Image (cartoon, rainbow, N blue to C red; front, side, top):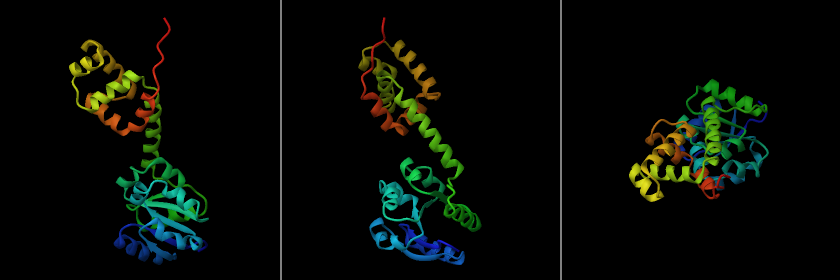
Length: 217
């Protein structure tokens, strides 16, 4: 098998040992098994395929980019489905592929071979989540300052009366704003809106930092 030298960058020793055994049976040569990016560096020049854990990618900002700058081989992120769905977008785009621990051995080998041949492999659920995240970010960037204020109050659990008093508007006006806000971010109630705000906090901060332009009369 061409390009079969594999470096395992996974935090848990037991997982590294298990994967070492499985990949060895599949014809791969394991050049090393480490828990950190720093420990991985000496092995990178001799690595054709770096398999890095999803948890490490979540904890180490720019892990995929760091590896990309230091090796010529392919980079694969491996993890359980729940961890893969929480991967930052830049980590996914920086890797050559993403593979789930929860697939069978043959499916994993097939995915690795496709990635080695130049294909980009991403689980459908992750691709859908990234697409939804991009759509939500676009929506957040289009929200007005007042709508961002509403979301912050909902995240704090404030009732309509508190929101009205804080913003200096009538409760009836708050209800109108909330109705329009729910429709814009595609949620049905205050709880869902608060969750949406939490998931899009960074985009909301960027949006609210720009002053609203008053409409022309």
